[in-house]
Length: 208
Image (cartoon, rainbow, N blue to C red; front, side):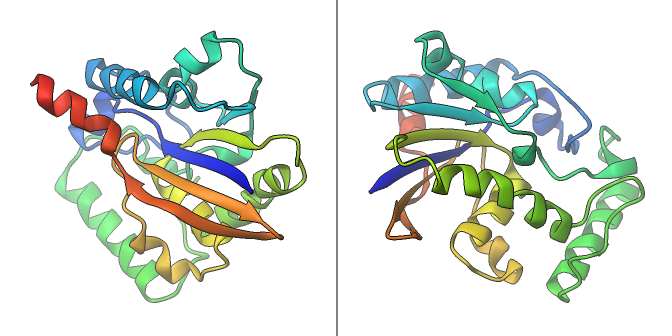
């Protein structure tokens, strides 16, 4: 069985402020995000990863940088980038923005996955571009243990794709910073081995 460790990136300052970053805002991890990344490394540093995949955005590779520094093979895949939120990326957390996102979430709940903000991507578009990273994972049998770092909304869509679930179920995948979904791939099928794990963050709680 191939083991795929899929994590969301660590916290950025915009995450902390409740500001949407999306595909178009390439922000750094903040102090909390770096601490989360360090805790993840300490917890999983002995897993014999064969390959690391991240999106093109630096908050993902900063999260797994300690693994990269060990010399592990690393590849950026633009297909793993976050959903592009268009005109709302980087905008302040206001009542206007919250209303816009409430309306978008309602559209998804109503089954409209083609809708998107001006200059942005729809969930359906992200679903389609995530098929290429999925093919990467399925066609590399020599990579038995894979670490993959990506983004919250894209992660939810990706998990639906891997599990052959409808997009209506993406809400069922919690996605806090550095949350882990460990997936297995065997006989052409993906399965969930660990669901929404943040066990690595316990050390941070003990130290606070």
